[in-house]
Image (cartoon, rainbow, N blue to C red; front, top):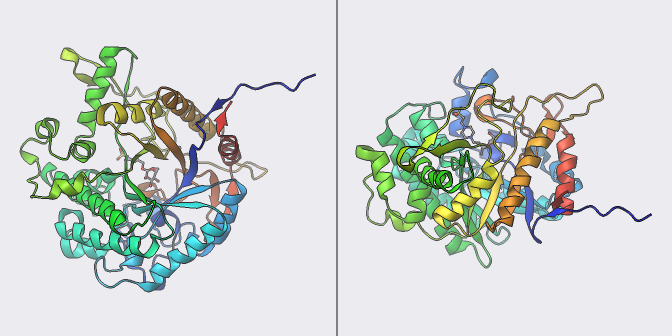
Length: 453
Ligand code: GBH
């Protein structure tokens, strides 16, 4: 009898699979080898800010364990890893002297990745602003932080440009702008008005521009750079023209502070309508920086928001009913179609012509079973549904070139501390053992075969 032929749902040849993590969430060694304090180190010391009053001091101790972590990645067949560099390790005071021990650490780490044949995709900034910049200048409220970022970007691209060819300037601006200064629940944890929120966004976009500039200046041959955004993703409840048109309008409205200035290089009528009197007064040259051409757009896709066409075709946003399927991370409504509409809207609304999914995953309070195995069928299920949507999206002509799963291992989940695990590998924080979950072995197979069945 012939072996059964299994029809497969292949991804395009050369599709780039990987895993992701970020320095502050995994490294630990918060005070080691001259590292300065970050705003998150500082914030975590304020009682009541973080679940269990957890801090980032040890995290996954990746600082001391990167070699075995890369060996495990290699065993799982990981060929690309999106990591971030800790700005306060490189420039402990934000913009003063360079800390050579910090530079050397990432050289050792990159050596180990090279030996394991894992390609680095480096995020310059994943939220760990040097506290010194917050204390002295008011952090992202000040243009001096933009200048400090420009210098930091120059330093790291000069140091690592020879060996790193994939750069991501910033991760998810909303976290250190609207959630930090508007909602006020992330560092610096001060609630301000819309005017300040818009200003911090403007400065973040300018910093992004400097990241692009630094890669163009010092990145060398073949260097590529883009931004990772956590665009809010509208999902039309009916896949018919009026609702899709409403989703397109919604995409601009929901992302008016980030994608609109980035792609248009000016404050558009959408921005001015929504920002009103709180719009930023930009200075000459700001937009040249903000809209420097990039090589790709990174999207972190976790969830979406349902919309329909309301009166006059205007988008009407729907509330989630209480029973809507949700991960243990309570903000993570399970909306796999966001993986279809996110990239598709980025292409159709803004003309994004090369897109990477720089994060996707799900946070649960996983527990090992009696045999010590983590049977995370829930995570496998969600990621698989998302990948099915991504496949369909690519099939429909949307230029998504790669996908990074968040995260390689459970780690410091910001306000949730060490709860709400997102790892493919389980981190046993008592022993620092990593245990691949069922989803890790499943994802290894996806990466290996470049297909779903
Ligand atoms: C990403 O954020 C981050 O890049 C990564 O570091 C993180 O570990 C991972 O995903 C999992 O969370 O204020 O209650 O409405 C995900 C996107 C957007 C999720 C802001 C939390 C705030 C929730 N985040 N959102 S709430």
